[in-house]
Length: 529
Image (cartoon, rainbow, N blue to C red):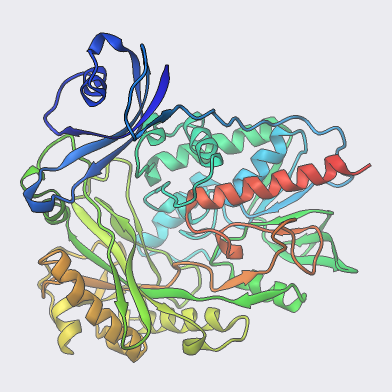
């Protein structure tokens, strides 16, 4: 009998084989456990009433006989994604705009089914992109097309590489397995909070690119789509770098949440879009040991435990806003994520080992139409104003404005003795963050910091640094699409996908969105006679 066992717990120091843990849970002799395999592993660090930290497993086991346990179920059937070659190849190769997670998986899906995509990515390939980013981090000029936001792999390539998603979709396993096949650690298939790290992601995206090319796809870097030709309510092609024209009946638009010039072009072309709520705020940094100790208590030095993270939320009843931690990067650093000249943007990044010794996370406050208006591009303008203000207060040289929590809460400025030195690579300037953000955003953030300090004592200590601005939490627009066909509601053949189109948040959900839209397109052409 093959079964799946949920909520199988084990103490950190329990060295028994998995079969013994299963036997104990099922109250049967260990000889009846023919096999056991971990499906998912999580850390339970809630420590209610002083309870110790423990591991919690989902396990598939094969046993002799039957068991009675409410949390035991038959092992579900495996869902295997198929990639049959389509019989009818479209007249024009489908075009994929952007080579982040959504565009990458759209292109990979098309290529695996024998439909050779043409990919245009405004940024550089991984190696040249890394060189451009490192040059900027070391005080060189900003490349507006190849940076932390743009280039092979998208913004995810310079991130923590988190693969968590709240989506309950069998195809999530396909996405994770594809990453493993391309070089990601196999453990991401089992961990509740899988991550790859920016160092390993660079190899993964290169290998996915190689597979697409081996299957007949074409990928052009430093190739920005500057115009989409729409005729009679249908796409007809694109113009690249303002000069070269390519015909197309299907365009997968995976431009990422920072493609502001593309949003402006789409708006001029009359593509249906709407402004969307998002969140803005700061990066907060602590010694990683502090977070480990806060989450794991006396077990914080246990080598079996991963470096700790946190997830915090606050509801501001007075101002009708929410505040929350976002993109928390254990053992990482704050990076310079600007993509426009004259703007300072922050983000978090870490390698697979998460061993920098510093934890950072975004603390952001929700903003919406009451803050920036209901014009389609009003959110873009709001982001840009914050980033330019941060640029000015940082010294107009891409140094980031930084303020201690104590100074921010008490309306002072000038403290430089931080609990941990801010890791933003270009450097920082002490500044008054209240002069950058709207008053309501500051007040909500202050109340959130005080609330979070009750959850994690010391979290909002006076000498903890805050670095501004975190403004690219998600797309400020949504490109409207039909829920069934996944095409633009007024431009047939245009498939808005991923985070930049407003339909996902993070690597896994973006990859899944690109995959599903490509599958929809393939089904459509297969049904066409």
